Length: 228
Image (cartoon, rainbow, N blue to C red; front, side, top):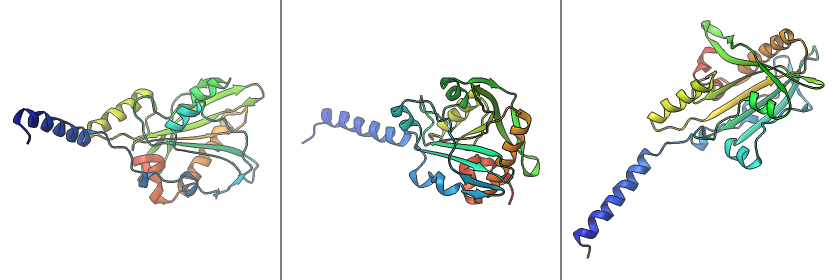
């Protein structure tokens, strides 16, 4: 038989455990973690997948990379003008604490590239909306590689680390842990203007080629602004 002295501490433990379970942040459920190789076509617009070029990978330890990313997709595409675009998409189901999608600035610098950040850029979309992008000029001996990327955190496309932290804080208030997606396109070129123009064309074609039902996974709340 339980005495009152025994019952009260047991009840307190039960209530505390229940509250912790209720208040525990919720991660993105597995059924909403779409498969990257299924939603990104191997051929779209004027672009056709070719044998994968030497694509720069995220520079993390094997254990940490396994924790940060549940999926990575690397492909190389070519168009009739023989322009080649390298695509990397990395998905992380939990953007909390030290687990967060790595910025290309860090990955490229860690692999010996000189990295120069360029001014923020927004790619025009339908209805006067735009996709916030970050452009970099990177160079390692024999490999000039301008690149464009965006990072989705939850439903937002923040361009700065502060904006990413604010997004995670806002979602934490409603007990949700946002997921994260890095989309990076790059090419080998010494002509920045030409390279970025081709990358913009590729990004537009890619977004339109992804099925409307899957676009939110790639660009968050901007999905409805892409159009048919």
